[in-house]
Amino acid sequence: MSSSDDKNYWENVYETKNPDQVSWTQEKPQTSLDFIKSSGLGKEARIIDIGGGDSNLVDFLLEEGYENITVLDISTKALEKAQERLGDTATKVKWIATDITAFQPTETYDIWHDRAAFHFLTSPEQVSKYIDIAEKNVNNFIMLGTFSKNGPTKCSGLDIQQYDEESLSGRFETGFDKIKCMTEDHMTPFGTVQNFVFCSFKKR
Image (cartoon, rainbow, N blue to C red; front, side, top):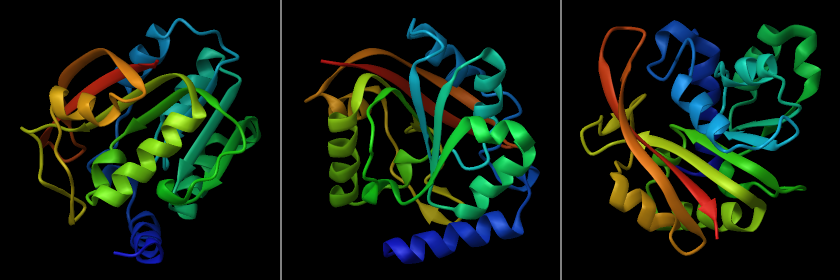
């Protein structure tokens, strides 16, 4: 799919489905929160959530007192849903609607978080663009969650790229050192189980 096809696809998903109708929804993204806290950075750390959509992560980060949060997603509708949910608090967050492979950051980030966006990049060109953007614009940490080799091969009708600790670490080894990896079963809103691998990396 082209970038505009991708955008239309995801706009339709968020136009037509509620959080309890999409597999990636988490009431509380505990693993992501644990990884972010484990960075040891202060509440002023610049955090970007890649493919954040209408994820609840931003709600919990605001609740924890983090002050510099950016949420990026290809779907404008997804970001609007999150803003509606947050109400007045949404003004504390920067919202960016773009395809991650076309992202042109105007600042650098201390923490780059991505749960379930990276695995949608299935071509070498998309992957290398993503990694290049991250390498140039991350000061400290990357935290990634993707479907594992024991996870689904498709999501929302699209092909995905599965990873394990070795292959995910290998993607980022030129600019980052692996801190830790773990696998986790995610229970979807409709009672199925998806296995994820989460890894954190430190800028070299």
